[in-house]
Image (cartoon, rainbow, N blue to C red; front, side, top):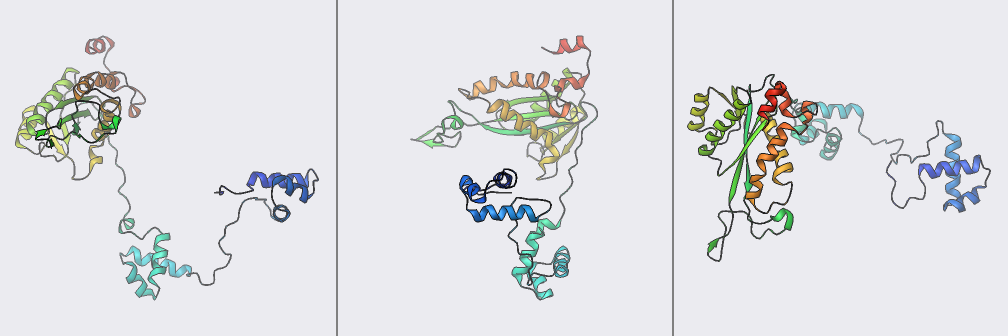
Length: 326
């Protein structure tokens, strides 16, 4: 129950009114004076207490008990049935001789007023590969370079990181850099690099570096999933996948949930690394990437891995684990 800020009584104070009159024997006038309400209010809640079973000292609905002019239930069902046949509101109103406003009100109450409400949402299909290396997810996140503490800390947006910005005849923007991320579907072991652009000239070397990193952990990569960025549709990336013996899978357009593990890793890296603290410059932020990745892979508990770090999914013997943990 929502009680407005100036309410004199609440269910607790109403129960106190009833208790003081029925159990303590105080007069309604004395209780009204003590509680700061009128004797009529005390009488109302006493009557409610004595007449109702079970006792509910809460506000009643303001809806009338009878509504003679309300739309009949069978008419409401007809409106909903026609709406499910993809008829628009005015068509339904004309077919049933109803007011368009009445039809609109019925559809809003039934949550069928929008076209998208007619189609049930696509069920979530969660998947996870059984063995590390069966599928890696690759994505790119664009970050603005900076030469001083940025607007997230200072609030000053007058010098945004824009390589095309000019002032007083000179370029003042620091430009952009691109963080290429890769995460293994089964183990969640991640690899990332900061590169100059998001073109094939950067995406291909990153793919080679990622595959080599997983090989250093004893993981053989067989598939790679990306979105439909131009660098991933390039012939150079196709040839690189072929040379590495990788099957390249691309997500459906405008369906980021297909590549959800990479999208989620991007969010985590932004929150825990890129925007975690006020770096003096983008070079300091770049230097902090590798230590953060080490902590992510080897020490940070992962929710989808039963609060174990991603490296635990490799199930390597202790001696080998220590050798790899450099």
